[in-house]
Length: 216
Ligand code: B12
Image (cartoon, rainbow, N blue to C red):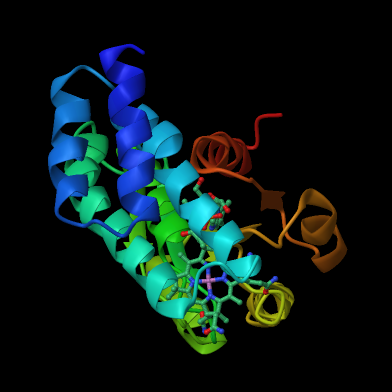
């Protein structure tokens, strides 16, 4: 095994085991060793947290273990995020409001999407988790947002994405809507009248760019 694949495997394991002490050192080692922040996240951290979710679904993990894995993932993200955000930009591509919908506290994917959008030239206002519809609408109005991004990780909260499309339309705002999160899909986005969907943060940047520039 190469040093890179070793450190990525160790990162996945540390997230899976909820080892938030080793995970921080390993994340630094990955970056110092030349892995990009995205490689570190997508090939190291994400497989670990996804596996934790599978074990939870299979009844092997209980909620405390899932919470520990999420904490380890977040600790590592704190190390990787500054490197990811470094490129920055002046927000010249457009103004984005992003949040996780009401009733939902999953924030790892949403924060990753927001960070990558900011790193690629969007001015991003991250409203956090459990964001009520009115807050999305108010912020979109205040900022004259080009794009509103809504994350939902639960089948029970994804309906909020539909409500959001309607609420923004009723408010007469011009902002386009992009949705995402594990239960969402292209078909779902089409069904609820959202303008865009992406299943990962890199694709989200490409879709956002297309939505605000109007390019195909
Ligand atoms: C970590 C985790 C938690 C952590 C969250 C910690 C945190 N601060 O975020 C904790 C332990 C707190 C948690 C709690 C719960 N969870 Co949970 N959780 C997960 C888990 C394992 C991983 C999610 C994650 O962070 N993935 C890593 C990130 C990087 O990926 P992502 O979120 O999918 O995001 C990517 C894409 O989806 C996309 N994306 C995300 N958002 C957006 C937005 C836009 C606009 C776009 C374009 C793209 C996009 O880009 C991201 C980056 O590539 C998932 C399993 C899974 N496979 O998703 C379950 C999962 C989502 N949880 C689940 C459940 C049931 C719960 C609880 C209800 C459990 C309980 N009984 O209390 C609670 C819900 C509490 C609430 N009200 O929200 C279920 C949902 C089942 C369902 N179909 O509804 C899942 C699927 C687990 C499972 N397999 O059953 N959870």
